[in-house]
Length: 60
Image (tube, rainbow, N blue to C red; front, top):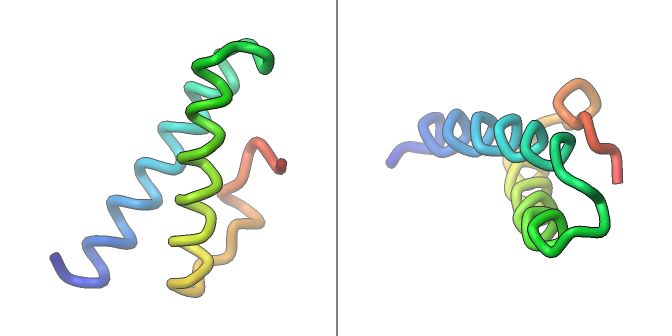
């Protein structure tokens, strides 16, 4: 997978995951598990130099 493809997949997953998180209760186990992936994706996207200012709906 090329770097551009990896960025595209990560951005799409980050957006999708945030929508699921918004639809979930913050104190649920599902939310806590999703938050772990959310943090991982933030690290991945930041390492690619992607600004999360516009992408991050959760802002945690």
